[in-house]
Amino acid sequence: MELPDIESAGADDRVVIVGGGQAGAECAATLRMLGFAGPITILSEEPTHPYSRPPLSKGYLLGDVTSTDLYIRPPATYEDQRVEVRLATRATAIDRDTQTVRTDGPDGVDDVSYDWLVLATGGRARLLPDSGAHAASNVHTLRRLADIDEMRAQFTPGARLAVLGGGYVGLEVAAVARKSGLDVTVVEAGPRVLARVTLPLVSDFYERIHKEHGVDIRTCRFVESVEVGADGRAVAVKLSDGVTLPIDLIVVGIGMKANDELAHDAGLAVDEGVVVDEFCRTTDPRILAVGDCTRHPCAQNGGLRRVESVPNALEQAKVVAAALTGNARPYDAIPWFWSDQYDVKLQVVGLCPSHDEIVVRGSADEGRSFSLFYLKDGAIRAADVVNNPRDFMVAKKLVAMQAEVDTSRLADPATPLRELLVDATAEAPGNGSRDG
Image (cartoon, rainbow, N blue to C red; front, side):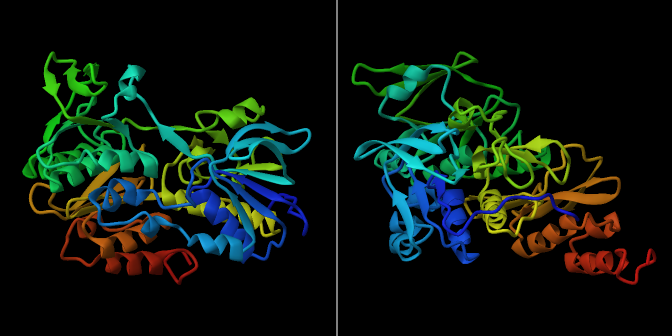
């Protein structure tokens, strides 16, 4: 494929990265790995060096993981690689004409100049319509280390927890809470948990697993109001069916909003995320964007999409670093995700909203392991794999090659999935197949 002419960074150019999360840290590290020698500055709103977020709702909340365990790289690594990290520093405006970023940090307001700017601003938790409820000291969202630190002190055996939202985060918190001995109720406005990310079969499986662990799941209900006592603590949640739940704490897990205001105010194209091309370039050739904040072309299904996942952040960071070092390549990675709840690991690869066939491998009605394959026009386009990491590694390859397989064998757990991969590879064009 012939790539467009993409300007790369000069040897002395300064790269400024706004955002100290996974995408920002990976971008800086990959730039150094690819030989970029110019100055790199990371502007991070948080007071700690970049850390991994997925364990927040699992191991860190449970107390099995410490804050230092979360570091993506030891803090000393940034100094060794000559990457300046400005902590507790918020980027407040971008001046594209002068190529500067206005910041507000411990030493006051400052203008940071850049030759290349990378927006890795991530996202923030969506709030309840009754925003006043979030002023209560026992109403929590889950996005940052500080959020979990506040929450953990209230995770005591016997406490009554209402989890608002039945997505990945809400269910992960519910699982940790049950392990910690809390009384848990999950409230989901939709007809089932995980409704936005999977099919009813998988939703039913997870509802069964959570109910087996004592979680009360209430679907088709939303929060009408949160009652706050005189001491500033929430004491009850009133639901749309008229039921009032007495509570000791609330976790709000109703999704995430992209932090695209900085880009919007700078005149860049945004659409519930910073719009970028397949090389992660914004509408300003000197500004790129990566990670949860981006809306980018979908190589698999067409159109634009926004993906909230660590693999997406890592891959986009590599694409940006490659572009800036003269090794431009388009972002075409197939998205994948995972979720850990109790002893159950869900791994998902691919997105196929317009599938026309479903193949189930194993049983979701009993036990704790099965797989679900999404097909379109006879080709495997996506898969949900529960508690089978070996099959998931094969499923990723089948999805990547959009393999066409014998669906009766695909549905048979006695047929090793790798056999189907071998057959599909042999039949692929250029491999001595019937099409060769």
